[in-house]
Length: 237
Ligand code: BEZ
Image 1 (cartoon, rainbow, N blue to C red):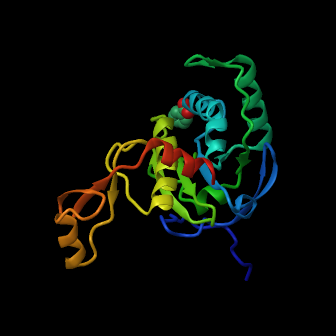
Image 2 (spheres, protein in one colour; image 1 turned 45 degrees about the horizontal axis):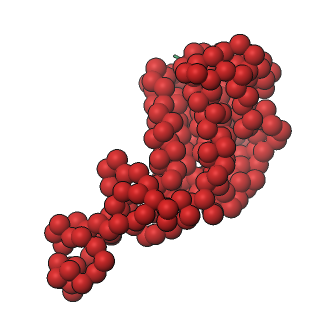
């Protein structure tokens, strides 16, 4: 009997190794995630080339590429269209489209062709309740060791917030560098959360105020972390 090599739909989870694949892209062939070892990667999917929401997203991401580079983060896009469609779409964006004050935008990061949907299926980007022929808007944050650290999914109709994607990339690197957590709506320069006390002794000493932090109660302690310290840590990765 012939072996069935068609990938099944799977949903990688936070903490899993990023599924491996080889792909053709607008910037040449890639072996993922090996080619990105030592770097953070944002792997994101979009439903289709030559569509308006995707066009606005690509222009926004491309205009932020240098900002992501500064924090050692590479961008990799994917849709289930072919290479020639990708090339034609990216040329059209550069030559004809203006959006939000941006024009002449050149997309320099790789855009994967995935006509077979092999990669999209491995990454849970095909969600049949939404569409079985187009990828949803997925965003995978993958760390320098190839581990998935954050996953966002948006439907076809809602464009992503790229400030939030950047904020999340900075927050992930900050939590790694300083062994802290970030509270709701955190931005560099705001207080961070100190992990909960792991013993009664530590809980008591925190409440007695003998550590460099503010404890509202034994389980909710924050400390200052300067904006400068955050940028020093994330920009030198
Ligand atoms: C868009 O990017 O505009 C789009 C793509 C697929 C379905 C709906 C909108």
